[in-house]
Image (spheres, rainbow, N blue to C red):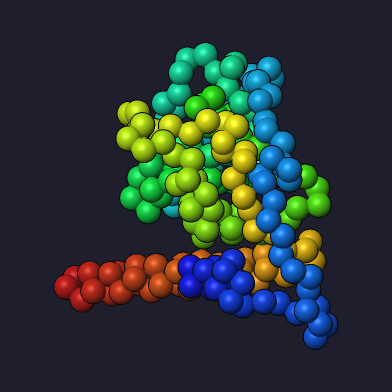
Length: 212
């Protein structure tokens, strides 16, 4: 999966439009194709989200089996489905933090430590999900992360600098083709993973019953 992402976002692999080439990719600043989200939780939404490397934006109740947020979450940012959030905490596999899309819930709230944003309608958000999952943007984040200025596991990145990062962007039509292609591979891999997990459970069951 990661190999395909690297080839596509480095433009080593290009898609065709009924046999013809799509237009050349453009370089856009994040601020030109998205808007920052600062909407506060005035509706008292209780679905507090956290960013997981494996599961993306996930409810704390689902991830931790309890809420570990502050008691007062009225000032948290309110996200809607398909919005994005950037967690500046770095971890294994995410040296420049993680940008994840809200997929599994209609709405949710996140800490104001996150940088939240929504793409304009002419941008395919599914394409951007794969773009960020590929880590192709990390070179841009690395440019603005202040050397030696890491505080309690957080990268010191200003909001202005973050929205100035550059994004490689094909035409809307090619964005859609890329998103559909990568999502189909991801779905196939998830299906195969589930099959393997079921086979493993069956194997354990059979082995256990051999000694009954």
